[in-house]
Length: 119
Image (cartoon, rainbow, N blue to C red; front, side, top):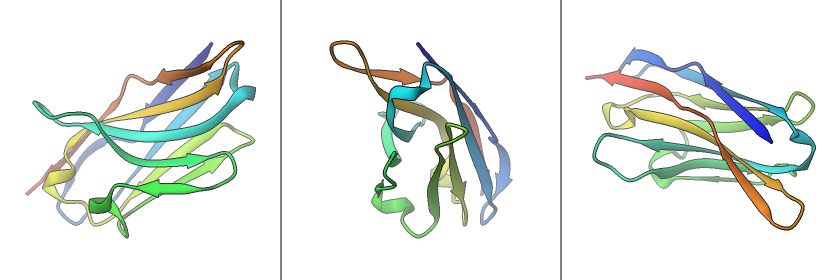
């Protein structure tokens, strides 16, 4: 089992910055990828950024150049640095981990952290 705990959300003004953290614990040795997703009220859950254990990254087009995902493999902590925040970035941000299980890959989710960007 893997547990994910996000932190770093809050209220910021347009143009501000936040850094989200996601700490993985439990059976973390088999995690091979992390991702940050976000979900606004009445909206679908979208992938914001993802990173593999090898360092390959992928970003939602609307956050490219503003957000950076990074991974500390030793600490099993993934970060999302968010700069130049816009009101449209307001959402609950959730951390996801992909882990190799006994017979199949397993997905784990954190509880989420609220990011609110005021106009």
